[in-house]
Length: 568
Image 1 (spheres, rainbow, N blue to C red):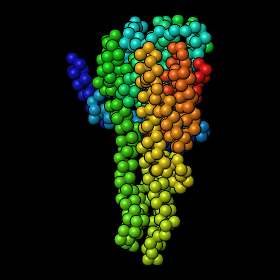
Image 2 (image 1 turned 135 degrees about the horizontal axis):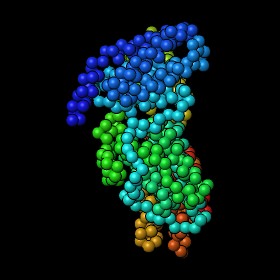
Image 3 (image 1 turned 45 degrees about the horizontal axis):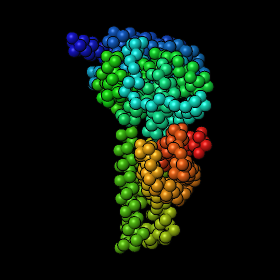
Image 4 (image 1 turned 180 degrees about the vertical axis):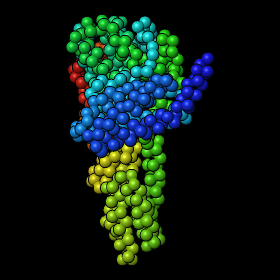
């Protein structure tokens, strides 16, 4: 029955496909003429008529995304007056982009024979944001009744909170700070993996604080969603960033209102958004399938990873294209570096090699110009000119000249490698010719990788040792070598010039020595929790410094805050 319905829908679309394409083209032409002559009310009205015609066709063939996109486009077009000034340029540009994406989506549907309206949500929300309207949530096309909610906490093992009112406030502030650090990292496009881990940790902290209260159900669902996003490597879209910004409000209420804030239920819309994340993840983990089963759902056959790949087909070159481009350029640069290495070592130096290197740099410069990376292209061409000069003078470059050439090549290579993360942008091009400090040299980066790897191992060892210490009824033998191990990592962090992390590690090491090893009585639970939070924050910080990512100083402040809370 379903197949028959889909076949009928597909056949209906085939009958009107050419008309849809023609109508989109007419709408684009009318809008283009209006942009050239803002007094042409007829062209603006024609564009509106074509958009309404498209909306009617999409309703007929049941393409929900196309219907909503046309509806929003009509509303926007009505906001553009005849004789529009430059302040309406953003509306016109967004409308143009919407028509372009709509045309791409029609081609996509014709090829795939599947309607995925969520692919059009980004451009639909662009239309709404340009009109200063509230954007739609990611679950806009997700139909599920969340009024009857299951026990989201059933699959989570979280110990109950033990402590007085003062302890409650301290832990609430720390958990909110953890959530804020994760959210800030997210908004600054820092390591999403660290943010996902912090979201999960913070959510579990709030589950403890809620102690079975209604709001605890929402925090359990947040914890499951954060873990699932981490497990499935789901990206943080603008809609998902807005979702976690919304959740932060409930963390704030626990801090400023107290336990009373945990007695209310989370709104249905928020629960629906979180359940949609689990549905879209495609995860078959028990905690995910348990939640979905309660709503009579199964993981989406079109999971987030596939959705992202299909989205790239609509919205331009994606990470895979950029990665292929970067790898191709790096391969050419590696060959060039091999030739420079031969000249530097003086192994049968040949002046003909100078011409070969110059040819490579010129080809590279031409490629970079086509990518609109003009500053990088200029550097490549300038070095090619110098090589031609040395060849004409029948001489090999001196040591200083060779070092300068190698430095330029390494600078281009560094920028090319960052195309994957930065994209082909002005920021990537701005890396050209910038003075690289000691921290940016290859050898220093290798040292940082080694220190980061050793530090991760030491912190993992520290957490295991403390766990064994607690489970063995506080047998101090498990902690005997810990201060020395942490001190060795402290030295490594000092060597790579990271005094902030070294200082936090020193505080943690001193706290373990004073409050665990030297103390005669068993440590308080709050002290152990604070140490665990500090070690975890340090671990997340170390994860980022071993990669090509900006170090997140907020994680160090979070670690220090955990230690400050219990006087460590």
